[in-house]
Figure (cartoon, rainbow, N blue to C red):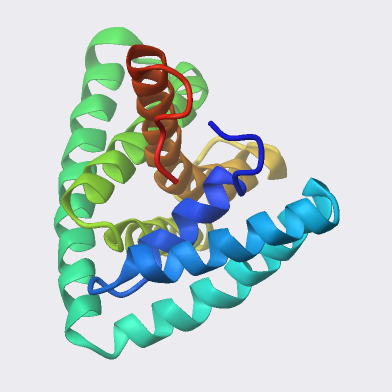
Length: 200
């Protein structure tokens, strides 16, 4: 990885919502501007600028893609992956409750592990099928957790941070895991092919 490369997660966020026709060119312009800013100011200042651009770009691109055919395809992929995630979670919950830990208190301890694992797998699958589907999947996870919190599905009293963890870490697992795996793959390619071979 080059020293003056922009934050990887911000790059992935922007790339995941850009329209399908010219994402490399659009992201390339941002990366080029980041490089110029990093050389003329500091890397921290350039990173802040890049994050501000990402935070402005993502909502407008998500809204734009919702109104066109690209958004419909990404939403369809997200719904399909969400259904598979639900089946995986149901199977894991059933296995834990019947085989591993029939007591409900043990399940409360294992539930976050199952949820985060399922969310991470779903995020990787959605990103693999269609770049923009991950954002819609994360949004679906947020809505589901919020509804379940409102319905108070958990009958055992749990602290506020337990539910807040589901609300924040679930969508983050959907979004961050594909980035981490992409980063690991890029690092592995760098070691195999030699330094300086990772593309932006």
